[in-house]
Image 1: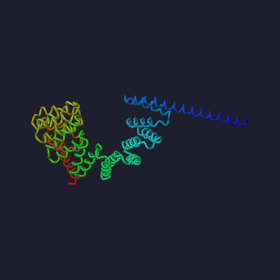
Image 2: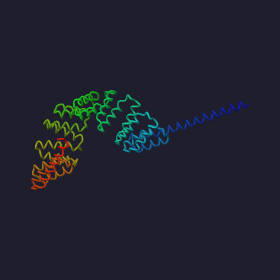
Image 3: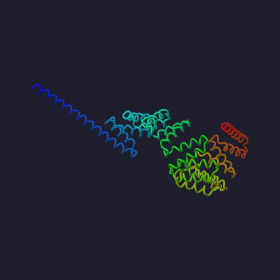
Image 4: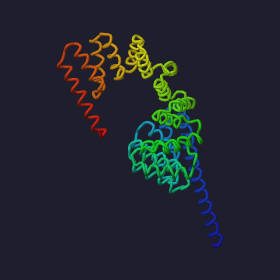
Length: 380
């Protein structure tokens, strides 16, 4: 009888233990299901760019299950987008506390650190990624970008080259190498890197654009035009490429084509001020002064801070004998850009024409001082 009683008690204890484990498992499953429900709602809000409600849902998911790593991660991402540094860092660290081998979380945390100029912390996170998987190329490129940003160019080159060894076709890495080589005056190497980037990623505008700059500086206008056109084909809304194409046409005395490029840019984005300034320059150059004035006025109406447009408008008024308007234009240009030597010289001419020799001499002295200071900075 005693033996049967002991056996019965053992069976009862086991049954109770199993029931408790089952209940715990059921509660755990309930928590996970509740967390997943809120997480999925958060994703829906995020996709609609309804970030505040997404945050509420991710917080609810975490309240249901504190170990829901994806909710911590997504919270960190949203806080990063909203520029809330401390909350972003905390959320991403919480995600990593759950899974420290999560490459995307380390990378995201590095992005947060980099955005807020916490470069050493960013470097540490990218190195953590490499400790998880040494075969990844992107962390080396990310490290190269930080070293480039902090002007540690040799270290940047080293990291970019490591990235290339791991992934020859990694998007953007050859372009970044090209930029550094160009900055270091190693033009041949820069050209080679841009061409390699194009070979691997032909649909990207930046390497074509950068090649265009090099060809333009070398006086190879034909190749510059071709490169800027290819940049525009790759990215039709890249206004810098359209502007540079127009500039090359101007330098090549192909003014009608330059006008066409600037007018096309304005069709794409009528709010741009730069093309109006450039059109004004061409019309001034071809002595179509009324058309030039019209374009400069359009430019400053779109962007009142364009010193060049104010100066150029003033110069036309000066040549037309409208001295008061000329002085107003030159003064505005100087107000916007005090070290604008040409504007000071032009204002001196206008004052002299108005018979104010003292003011004219003052502006000439300022222009001379600025010119000397500039030559000193350039080591001349």
